[in-house]
Length: 185
Image (cartoon, rainbow, N blue to C red; front, side, top):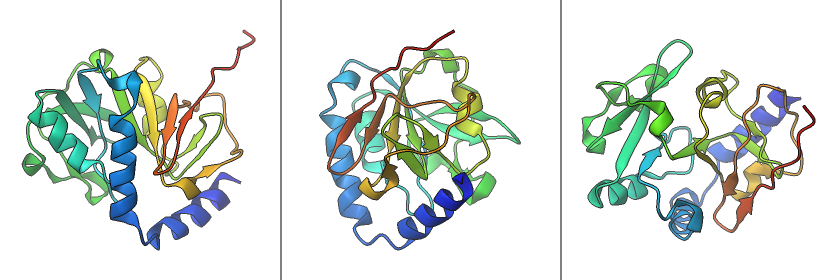
C-alpha cells in the first residue's frame, strides 16, 4: 500500500508545475508559524526530485544568525552538520548536496523540517522507504514539521509502530496542526 501511494504521489510531484510559487507560499506559512518564533537551531533538508524548496528560508535564517543544519547521510543514519552557506555543499549520497564537517549534537536541535512523499492528517508520513528520519528522530524530541504540496496530504496513510509522526504539516495553503492522540501504554 505504501509503495503504491509513494509511486502515485512521486509521479504527480515530478510534473507539478507551480513548484517555485508553491515553495514560496510554504516559506511564508513557516515564517508565520508561532511555534518556531523563539527557536534557534533548525535542521533542514536539501530539496531534490521537485520537493518543496526551502533554500530561501535557509539563507534568511543564516543571515539572522540562526543555527542551520543539513543532513549528511551514511548507510543508515542522518548526521546533522551545521552550515554557514549553501555554497559549501558537496554532492553526497543519492546525488543530493551535503555538508562537510563535525556532527552537531542532535539533542540540541529545536526544529526539524521533514520532507516526505505523502503525509496524512494524523501526522503520519511516507518517505522514500529507507527509514532515515524515523531512526534519526526516535530518541530526540524537536518540533517536527512536515513540508509538502497540498496534493501530498491525504486523509489516511498506513503507519507502523516505528514511524515518527510530525507535529505540523505545512503546505502552500494550510498549516495542519496535528493533535496528539492519547497513547495506551
